Figure 1: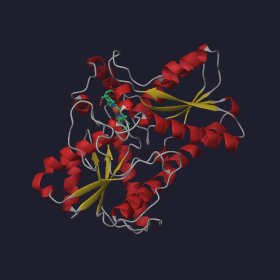
Figure 2: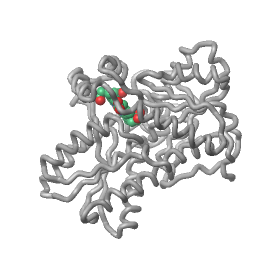
Figure 3: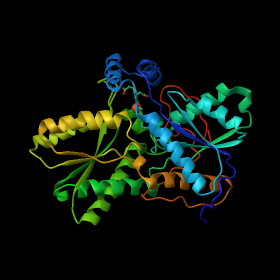
Length: 369
Ligand SMILES: CC1=C(CCC(=O)O)c2cc3nc(cc4[nH]c(cc5[nH]c(cc1n2)c(C)c5CCC(=O)O)c(CCC(=O)O)c4C)C(CCC(=O)O)=C3C
Ligand SMILES: [Fe+2]
């Protein structure tokens, strides 16, 4: 066992991979159509989500946050004397993955390590990125021959993410007149039950997506109770359901749960920690800060939203630690992955059939299948 040395070899480029979002009103509908192509999403839902973007002049916060993350990653790499180009690509908006691969090639790269802005395991948050990377690789064509693309493991277990959440959650609770009365709502993106049921190694139990969130939530609740001498309760709730009512998605919805708490005549504050997201994109600024905050105000439940890890230097430092860990692994060194949670850490090379595409099998990079 060894600690990863401060060396990114064999990697000669880093690719920050994200979801993407529109930046102008004209980009909204093409973006939404791209995201939902071939998916079972009703038109009414697209119109409704379009309104969330139009209310902000068509500009999602996600790309600006990624531009900021890109700069901070570059600065942290430079601080550690790691001299490597860092490029950025999205699944669903400019700059697309194919352009990012071209940038890597132009910089003379031969082996790229991808770092995603989604930390969890399920089709939407892992394999779909890998499929889109494979499609981009195809699109680049012969120029990409010989270029190897690897990926950092899904990093919900990493201490930097957990500690960033712990610090932010503690600060939010300490800001309340009586922290002991709070209830923590850990929030993540709802997905179809079938996608959760099949999330994970592919040979196992499934439900890894929910399980990873539950494990992080439990650890965070224990940490804050230990620090504050309280016994607050935490639970997992969901936002941003988008499928038709006939298809089951993960529940309860955050709004429904807040109403239910109010009906049980609780006026205790809810502290809302969107642990499913690393930065304040639309799900956070619309679905939580706007919609869920309004629900809470209507039913008389005090509402506090915890800042996402994006704001924390510790998070960016941890991403660089993850890059170094992946590089050591690629060099064949035996490295103990840093972890803050009980249970398995996900391998950085995805197993055959893990987090499957339930519609059509497609080629995917960064795996052994
Ligand atoms: C697990 C998960 C993450 C977290 C992992 C990750 O970060 O990747 C995530 C992130 C995001 N999802 C986003 C936006 C959207 N997701 C949609 C639709 C869907 N998401 C799904 C799942 C997830 N989504 C699913 C199962 C669907 C149904 C369609 C399908 O089966 O694929 C739709 C369609 C309209 C609608 O909401 O119905 C939009 C606009 C944005 C950008 C926001 C911004 O602009 O700031 C981000 C970061
Ligand atoms: Fe989504």
